[in-house]
Length: 106
Image (cartoon, rainbow, N blue to C red):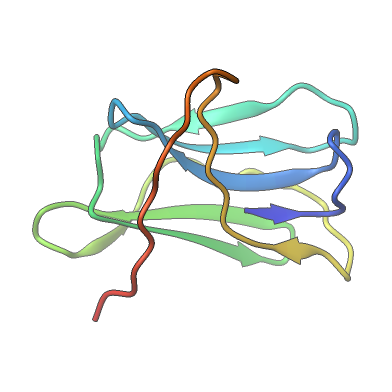
């Protein structure tokens, strides 16, 4: 996730990998705006990568073969330095505790 600020309604871009395999580049291009997304055709990728090039964000995913490929559109989202970069986990249900494992791959 890359965010302009830690405000709940901040401008941001992220890659969301849902429990059912749905993977999407999600973003809010204006403070307080509604979140939009570009869904990938690849379900449950093995690896995820988000890239920022100027004002454009791109989602890269790999399937079983391990080869990273660009997936979906590259929306324009204006972020000014400094901004925040991090990893997040969300259940979308306040009564559900989720578990995630993060590891490096070579």
